[in-house]
Amino acid sequence: MTLSPPVLPGALSGWRCTLRTVFGLALAAGLAACSEPEAPLSRQQVYPVKLVVLSDESGGVIQRYPGIVEASERANLSFRIGGELRTLSVQAGQKVEKGELIALLDDRDANSDLNNARSSFNLAQATYKRMKYSVEKGAISRARFDEARAEFQSAQTQYSRAQDQLSYTRLKAPYAGVIARVPVDNYQVVTAQETIAILQQPGQIDVTFNMPERQVRGIDRERVAAGRREDSALAWVRFGSGKIRYPARYKEHDASASEGSLSYQVTLTLPEPQDITVLSGMSATVELDMQQLTGAVKGQWRVPLAAVVMRDSVPDQPVVWRYVSADGAEQGTIEAIKVKVLQATGEGMVISGELSAGDRLVTAGASRMTAGERVRPWVKEAGL
Image 1 (cartoon, one colour):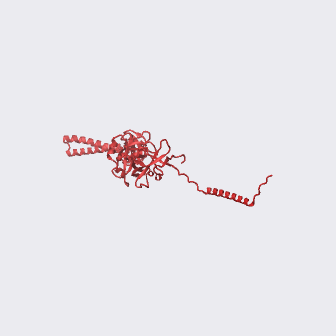
Image 2 (cartoon, one colour):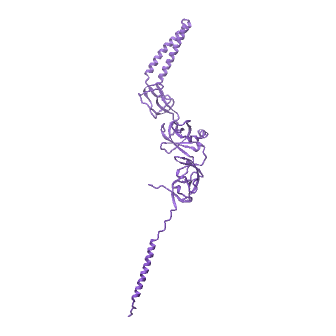
Image 3 (cartoon, rainbow, N blue to C red):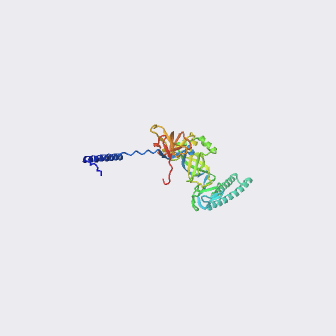
């Protein structure tokens, strides 16, 4: 039997102290590790950006105006005399032929006046013939014959006038066309020159709109005249909310400003569309190629206001950020393009610079961009 050597109390106490020391050091190290700050998150390297694409339309500096449709050839049909309407033969939208009856006035008074004038004319004519025979025979004086001749001529004039008055009770179409509007009702008493119907000639329509003075001042007359002769449109018209735009020609503009404003009325003309119904008074949207009308230099673009920014390093030089995509990649970088601001409009800024159709420019957050920054086009997701 082997006996273990006795453990002295002093040795046992030292061993316990050693364990406590080791445990304390380990706990302190653990607590120190827990209290260390976390490493910072890495900064996002690719940013989503909203882009706008320069198109041929924006290169043309297209200006848009609200317009009103009018017929190129139209007539406000009215009677030369007043009276009561007894027949109203047309309604809005109806096609009529030249000479077709539009409306008829009560002609009883006109017929009565015609009958009286006819009787007076017949009597004066018979008297004139007798007096002519008598003066040739020397039976009456020349003065008496002159009186008879004057009475005959007066009666003839009255008879012709009565015939005209009767014809004025009948309103006929001066040419073939379409009734655009009928502002009166049958059996209504109308006055002379009061509009009974508006007749417009089909085939060609006009669109009128107001243009500010500064834009009218810049229009080149020679270019406008050339646009009238050549088969090239300087303007387009959209009707209602339709997406189709119809080419139009610049026709004319007023020589004086509209009352109470510094704008001038401009008129465009175009063939009447065959695929939709367009009548006078309908609304339209006019699109003008101001670059062609004014002879402005090529290379002008209209962009959103947010696309043009100033950099802190060059505060006097406006720039736009152009997106440069990597081949086959969904992301790319941006580069600063120096531009010149030509005009500020309600739809953005007109600028010039080394840009071309198809370039994509940053429009949201452009003021925070830096050259060479990695970005990706922002795509609108469903519900966002």
